[in-house]
Image 1: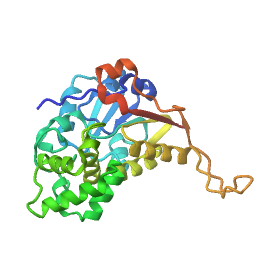
Image 2 (image 1 turned 90 degrees about the vertical axis):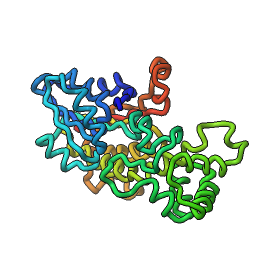
Image 3 (image 1 turned 30 degrees about the horizontal axis):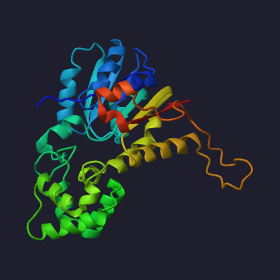
Image 4 (image 1 turned 45 degrees about the vertical axis):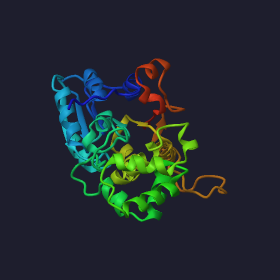
Length: 310
């Protein structure tokens, strides 16, 4: 299957990274190589791209797409939170890092991966096929209380308790083995009046289960707290988020780095000695233009935040 992915905020990302032709840049979520191709176009033979992804199919697609560029290209099968492995691959500090969060178009369109509620497939949802936990284990093995929690917290779904109740009731009859089964259970759980407006009724629950399976928020929190340490002076970290849970983590971790003081608020002056080692490039997150929204509706919820190492 062809790896089809339209990179969001493409020009904004490339401009924000402030790419040096001889620099070292990390694409921590290389996907099909959409953003990376733009990075490579701006790199000379002296420049280096470190392409990272937890999905081997993504890495192979990126390897093929980026084969014609003159810069050095290294491909690393890892999670972007594995900063030690990334630094080792880069041979030291880097000049820029990009994270394009969430699930890719390829993963959604590849039915057998089980990410989409629009196609019937086995309950999988793993971004890294070597991982053990799958959507099947979550849906069929988690308690009703735990299911309700992750659907509420990770999906921000107000019908979480009812959906969890229906899942547990149906799986008692037979295991839920396909995404089609799960979608129908979710539809039955949400009252008809609530299904008439808003997104697909299964969207939030599928998001929640995918986040749980891949521990997306845990990896993001770890990565954002550590990635500034990978940057050289003047290097930039750019992160595209797609929902409020991701953006909240990025904003919180950026703010903590921008204001690291741990003194009690009542102290008139700082005595802890902690000072910021980054500065904010984007005062407010960058969002898609009207032109991009017409071409790529997926970009509607995208937010780009950027900081620079001092």
